[in-house]
Length: 167
Image 1 (cartoon, rainbow, N blue to C red):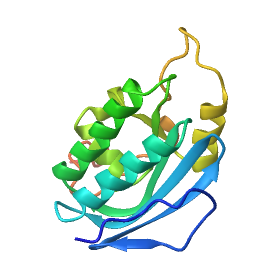
Image 2: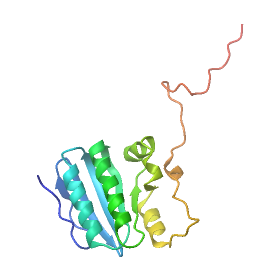
Image 3: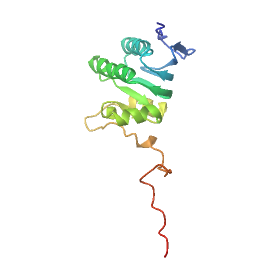
């Protein structure tokens, strides 16, 4: 199995593992990990190893951009939740901040994981939040910025009713 090695700094070429790839970029003390492709059970060990190494080597928040991920299964969701646990156990208040407005964001909302994961529409928004000190009154970010305006489709039962016909 091809487990990626997290380079200590800078943005490197994409590291491929299975049907997925990742890149790493330092924004001291935070690290941005960009994921792409399909993340299924075969890719989970590589994802877990890369997240573990980033958590061990860095002292800031871990920002995970999944904007390029086309699909994600429960095994990889488990790897993300394991990263959340390890970050919470690490010294300091460290957070896994997920950047997505697509399929991964939808999965996180449907599974209720947005209650424990911070979701952002852009890497810049996540970096900005990571640079601010946390206060007890600060709440988790809303993923409303990701929500696209609702448009009715022919399969949408909540679409506006058809105009009443006249007799």
